[in-house]
Length: 306
View 1 (cartoon, rainbow, N blue to C red):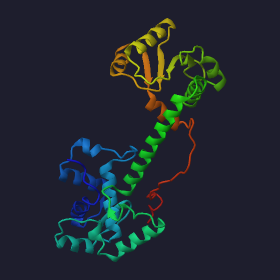
View 2: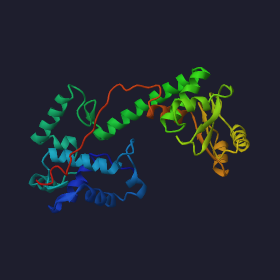
View 3: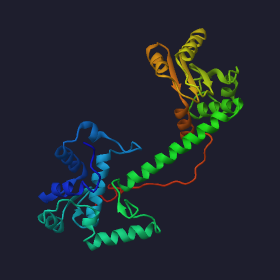
View 4: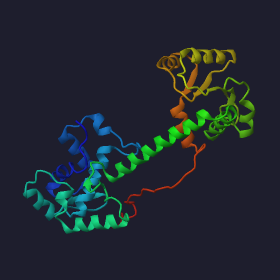
């Protein structure tokens, strides 16, 4: 089964807390996962950013919303417990607890109004088009970020694919240096750009001391790069007595090409157009920041004396 949305987790979370003991989110997540029969893969499923497990995030938001409705209350460092109101809510035997259910409590309505006013008329926290979303606010933010990232990566790859060979050479040099290869920018510039082939070929230092060398081949192709091209590159490595190589393309590699590099002794890294664009974004090659958002959480250590 798929992981329930955070609203569907409100009732299981409140039922977990009905023993009136104080609990942690981790304890609640484990109990709910067992109760729902979630597999290890489902329990391990991450948010788009990979920064947190999806189940943990959704249980945390379910807790936050029920705290705002005073069904649960914080208790001690990073813990929570059920309130009298929460017990009364369970005694009413609700079939589900969601945002609509929580709207009966004035504290929760006040929270929603405050969230709406702080967002200057934007959609309510965790809601879209006036109806409650299945995603938590953090999930919505991460999904939007990933969508913008994919769009930027595609636009960047389109620019790279239509750029001149000399610009492509500069981009690859700048990127490799930014990633820590090639020593200085001057050294890297001298080592790369020795042959045409509508791209670049050359040798670059693995580190600033030049303890090893990496052979580079890059192709601004639209067609898929197959095994013959990669096998030819491996042969070039043999002729140079090189043990490591990086093959960069603006298109993609065939399955046979990827299988081939996994079977040979030499270490060859294949970087396709999608990965090239993502690395360029990660190391700020050809992109500029527009706006940044800092997501913060409560520092429990700060409140430890409470």
